[in-house]
Every structure is written in C-alpha cells, then in structure tokens.
Length: 116
Image (cartoon, rainbow, N blue to C red; front, side, top):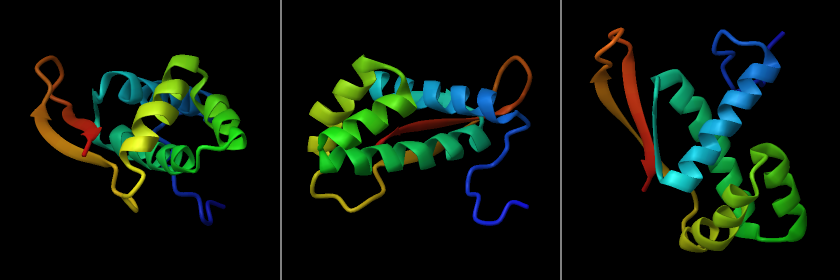
C-alpha cells in the first residue's frame, strides 16, 4: 500500500529513483536550474524544499543528513552557506516550476526547476 507516500514512483525502482532525484537536487543547488520532465521536476522540488528547510536550521545533524541525501560535499556546502542563508526569512516556496514546452528530439514535455 502507498499510504502517505508523497513521491511518485516515476517508473523506476527505489534505488534508481533515489539516485536520479539526488542528482537533480545537487544539480539544482550547484547550477541554479535544472531542465527535466514535469513529474521528475515535481519530485525533485519536494526533495529540495525539504533540504532547504534543513539548511535553514544549520546544525551539524542537518548537514550530515543533507550530505547523506545529496552525496556531494560541494552541493551540501553551497546549500548551507548560500541557499540556507538566502531563504532564512522565507517560510516555504523556495523553488519555481516553469513549463517550457515539448523537447525537440522526442516531443516530451520539459519543465525548468529554479530558485525563486
């Protein structure tokens, strides 16, 4: 049963989904935007919102937890030194999701996830 499970399955098993979402979250933190399909963007958005809330706390336990999710020291450091400080006074809604239209190669819908 899927009671209270918020992340969609995205047609992947758990380990691949975890890897894809953490990679996209790290790319968003490092580069400031990421282009992907709308379902993946929404799932990544949920993960990133939780990570920024952890970064607003700023304690060592939150840093270790964020590193275990992201797997990148560069992304974790940027999350806690720049992004967490930038959104210290904001209560939520740290990211924006824009639909860009179909992709050239296979006509898949593309969405851009970026910071507010």
